[in-house]
Image (tube, rainbow, N blue to C red; front, side, top):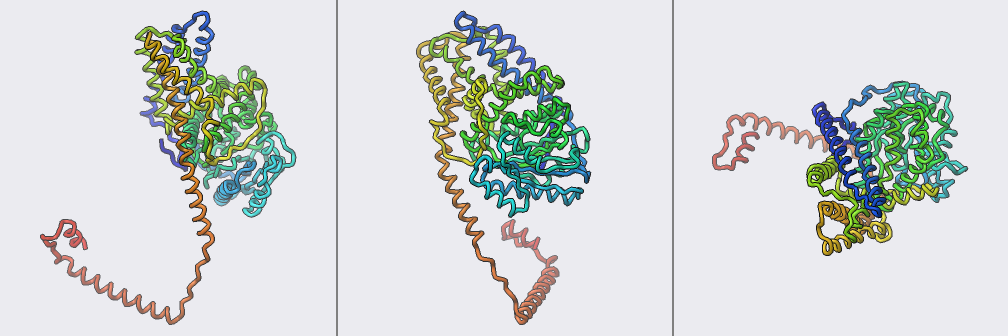
Length: 594
């Protein structure tokens, strides 16, 4: 799946609309048939019934989100904004949120934002020019480099705000920036938020301001793309983002259920003031702020153009840290806002989208249950599912499994690595669920997007234990139980699949640890080369004497005269030239064309 940095996310043509609609409709019918058949094949033996029901609940979670994906894929005509918003009344404040990120990363972000502001100011010439402000939370977070970042802002000519009172995570930093930048026209004042590692393209402001020509639009979210895809984790994380922003976000925006995604968005100051600023109660301030906006009747739209490029987590440790923060924040916010999601003033479609988002991170617990489901059969010969009907296996179960894998292969870039990353993340989401259940809050930790060598046995403990249990169970079951019925094939298949995916994740982790030394060596060479280039002395300017200029001009005239005589002679003789039959064909053609 290819994408272009300055192009819109492609929408299907009319012909593809029909095929996509037919495919979605058939998939829904197939999944419903599976659901009915699967319910009748639960093993409800007295001591197995709780585990069989738990397994069926995990499958229901999977099916509900499958329906949500089908709904997002349903063909619909999305709104477009081809005309530039030339209103000179808009006041654009570009906020870059910082909390200890490396200065070399932040420098690129500042320069990109400054260029985007310059392009917008030159093209639109607003009454209040767009300005760039760095919101530095490093001071209250006690980061060593906050002074260095302050000096860099002074050097690059951008505003710098560092708060003295902590609290509220990233939202507290943004709210402090809002307090330090008052405006007399909140409706036409736009707050544009960037993370420290997301570089805006030069046309960012020109394009993200287009929907604000509609007075009903309160915020606009643009996609996220990653530039660093060297490690398998970064490639898989990038594929997840592409899927989310190409297929899920457009449908959410169509139903006015789109939530802010942390960076690359613009919002009216009046809308933020109406909900009391960014929500500071939860660590996922973007999600809860969006929920407050929708509860109060505000409207957000999705801009399907890649307008900024960022950095993905490059190692499992970084990815797990990021996903732990997102998942536990989602669970905490869901417990607090569940009543409003179910019975609040939002529309039915908005509630559906928010409930799907709120329950998404249950995938960790769901995958954990699905991985443990074959173990009773592998070690005791007892299956939680008993499909003894060939028509169910051959007519419903196998085609649905195959179609799901085909969807994954078609919809995801780097599908195998993306699938592995999904499978190996179950401990993070499971731990986040139970931590939220007992009310254990986690601190905000910035994800530093730099590859680090990591110990597989430390970051991959739970995954290794489950993989070993499945492999041992497979070997034991094949020698002691064999194939008892059709349900045996299901247990063997899922045990083999999970064991293979977990083992492949371990292999990819070890392989990149071995490549880490080469990457470090390449980085060091590039750094040395850059230092040598920057330390080269300035070339001396050669000043020609009058005598040298005179001789040079005479030589130029002589060369021109000789070239002209030669050209005239060749032109006169050209019609008489004939190819020599003894020469090769290519040489003949050169002579004729000469």
